[in-house]
Image (cartoon, rainbow, N blue to C red):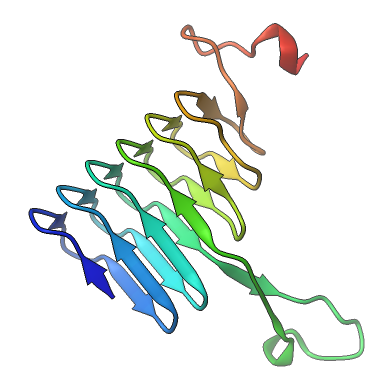
Length: 139
């Protein structure tokens, strides 16, 4: 686990690093956030992870012949750029890359890549224009 200088971690955060967990300089991790790295989670500098956000680089396989608590894990790195804002209670799933200066709305479920400077929200997360409405390209 590597935590950059000037990073602020509020009470109740759960940081678990079986793999690599890197948090950049001057990043903020809000109350109750959960980051669990089995493979790799990288968060750039100056990012804001709001309260109760969840970032995981893994999930379970689904094999009908085995109980869920004995399923294999499927892993893929999560890479979050510099100056990214992840809203309250948003979830970022395995294999996602979020570009620099992106904004993830509160309660969003991010299951695919987000380009730099994008604003996304919803379940699953989709591009939003500046007023919060879906952009024409998402219709």
